[in-house]
Length: 518
Image (cartoon, rainbow, N blue to C red; front, side, top):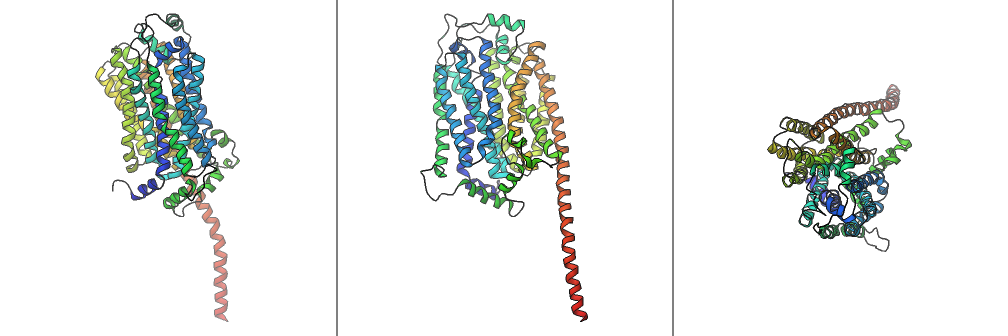
């Protein structure tokens, strides 16, 4: 068979939980991609300037980072984890439903901040729960999990597109490049920005009425089955106080699954989590007294793994955000309608790449996929730099970038957790670092593009990709150091046990000799 029977058995045993975690990541994808296409309509709705509306996007990204950082605290029990997922998925549906009635930019920013918190909690808990269930076999299921982000991110703009106004509140076709600069480049107050902001006060008379509120309500309805599915899982696991029955809890099934995977190797998972802190939030990990005495390699694997995702997820956010700006500016100078397809192509490639990575992650080790994908991303950006005047290769390169960058995050999660033997807080650290990279890199690269020109977009991508690859090489070196440390520890423990056994053996030999002589 293409897939090992043991993997199929594990999935069947935990199918309900796995499918539920995948579905909440679909909610994550829906929420992460809808803001871009609807910016002009939201600007009209809130009667705000371009500089004001950018705070809405910053609020969502910043709170997503906070949610990712603290999401691990809900992992304490199965009930708290599922309850947090239920509330988060329900919040996303509610936010979609109330966005059309947010007529003030501050109210809209608060709504987006709440959605960001919900997304961060979903991001951390879903990853942690799958890693906890499948452990060394988690790579396949993490690839599928992150496929649903891409799927949701692909569906969201497609739903919004038929309801978007052609002209917004007025004539937004002039200075299109400058508009996109304002949209993506947050927290900047250059003279050019101030000049354009004064020209973009809304509302304008004679603009087309927007029907985008229908898109938000449709997305709210599409997402509504997700919290219902989580609630049904809570009911099925009999975690609701007034429900009683004989259905086994998830913990029992997890232990059975891990027993099939690991046999008698190593201590029990709960004992290991107790000793090294488990997959808690970042703050609890840093305060864990049991981390004292661990080697430097243990901490460097957390740090370097987080830095790799800081760079690579930063590239994902930057490319999806600025490829339109790069395409409409010289030397490309593509029509705005044509350039608008690039972001959709990029997300479609990420979705296809994560789907393709599901069977590949079963056949190849995560470290090999990481090496291949990161090298491929560097080569692709290099080719985009060389053929920077080719419109055709821009579309081809966008597709290749999406394919290579798609599976780096789930592969890194599986790789670092495997290195650390599922101890420590790798998932929380990596998810938080990825969110931070996406937020910081968009602001940093946007500032550079504004000051240096559109060509610096690809140059920044090349520099970030190379730094990420160098950090990844460092991660490989510390992996070897950590493996040597574990090998040395096991040898020392063996040497300590041997002298204890020798005196008993020699005593028994002497007793036998005495008996023989007598």
